[in-house]
Image (cartoon, rainbow, N blue to C red; front, side, top):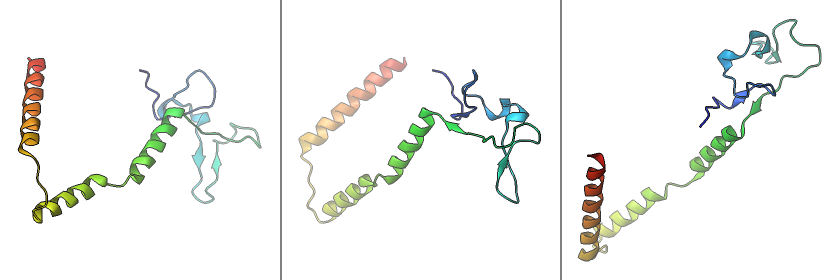
Length: 118
C-alpha cells in the first residue's frame, strides 16, 4: 500500500502525494493576515494566475465516512438503557440455554486464540 500523505498535493507533476515539507518554497501558498487573500511569494507567479488545491479521492472518502459516523445515532446506548429498564421491572429474562451457549462459544474462541498465539 502506498502512503499518499495527507491527500493534498500539487496539481499534476510526478510527485502526486507530495508532503508540504517537500514542496519548493516558490510553490507554497501563503495567506496574508490583514486581507485573508492567498498569494505566492513575490515574483513567482504571473498576474491573474490562480493557485489550486486538489484533495485526493481517499481523503474525500475519509471525510465522507467521518461525517456519516458523526450523524449515526448512538443506538447502542439507547438499547442498553431499554434492557436495563426491563431488568429493573423484572421483564427481561434470558433462557439459560442461551447463556450457556454464549459461554461455550466464548470459551472455544478464547482457546483458539491461545493456540494461535503459541
